[in-house]
Image (cartoon, one colour):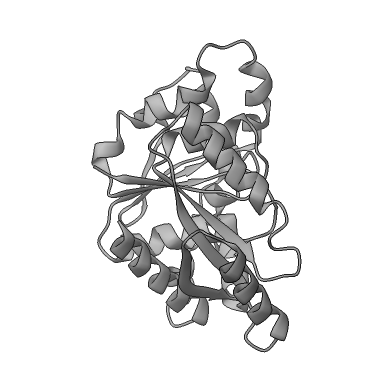
Length: 253
C-alpha cells in the first residue's frame, strides 16, 4: 500500500510547493510510482509540472463536488512515474460549497481510497492555511511533512500546526503521524540559517530530516519552465538535495 504524505505549513512561502514537486519527481526517479495531489487553489504544483491549469475539465474541485471520479481527474505520467491530480482557482469556492455537507472532512480520503494501491507514494500539497482542504488532506494522509524556512520566525505558527495535526489524529484520523520537519532556503553563508536549525532541533520533539534544502537559483527557475529540478538541472545543488531527501523518506517508510 502506498504511503500518503501531506506537505503542510500554514505560513506561505516556506517551500511547500517546491518540496511537493521536487520530492515527487525525485521519488519517481528512484523508481517509485507517485501521485501528486494539488489541494491549493493557486494550482502552483499543477503548473510546476507543465500542466496548463486554466484549461482543465476535471480537477480536484469537480472531484470534491462529486461531479467526476478520481480516475477521471488524474493526469497520468506527466513525467515518468508521476501522475497529478490537478487544481486551479475554482477550488477556492469549495469551502463555501461544502457548508452543511455530511462528513465533508473525508471527501478526499474516500476518493483516494480507490487509487492508493496504484502508487508507492501519494504527496499532497496543502494550501497555506488551516482550512477544510488542509483538514481533508490530513484526514487522507498517513503523515505530515513540514517544510520550515531558515529564518527568524521559523517556529512561529508551528505549534498551531502541530496542534491541528494532533486534533485531526484524535478526532478524524488516528493513523496520522508527524513525518517530520525539513529545512528549506538554507544559506550556509549566514549564521542565522545555522542558528534556526539548531534552535528548531533543540525545541522540537519531531523528527528533523538531515537534508537541508539550499537557497538555489536553479530551484527558483525550474517552475517557470514547468519542470521539476531533477529534469531542469540534475547537477544543481537543489536537485542533489531533493534526491537526498527522497532517499531519507524511502528509508523512513
